[in-house]
Length: 205
Picture 1 (cartoon, rainbow, N blue to C red):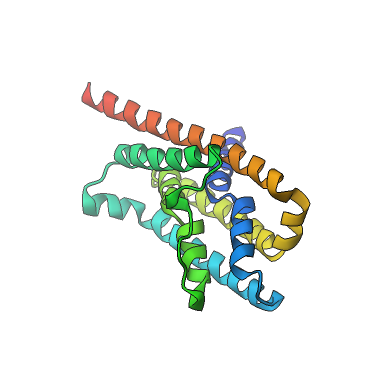
Picture 2 (cartoon, rainbow, N blue to C red):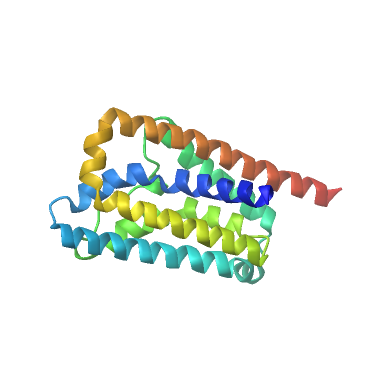
């Protein structure tokens, strides 16, 4: 049972750091701050539903994608680890990674882009989801999706109360949170790389 809790906490911290709800709340406020409360709720809900569907697809079809393209779990862990590390490195230095940021956006549907993709369901989030569910066991996939669903709900409430949250923590507080999440991400990314490289070395012996 303790292993289950440990796994759930690890998955939650990994997703929390890569999605960074607090920092993305600032992005959400910047994108929809001029809209009505009802519109903000609608956009937040749509963005997070799309995000969950994207992660659900990659978590469930991960093995099929592996077989289709001849990808190994070790290759995913190494590549995903590097992506996660780079996002964390940029955040640790007080910057937003290009992989994790929104550039010019289409005003007609902010919920899809840049909110859902690439802000919430970016390469790092997808790689993290595939890594956690890559064992192919039902328990691993269920834990990954359940934890991610909880995080989506948390992010939804962060979004709809964005103005209050940002007023409470301030710019310096947001900067501290971003750097802490960056440190956690960098460590998680490096751990993914170590696990992947270790598996490759063992396979070669």
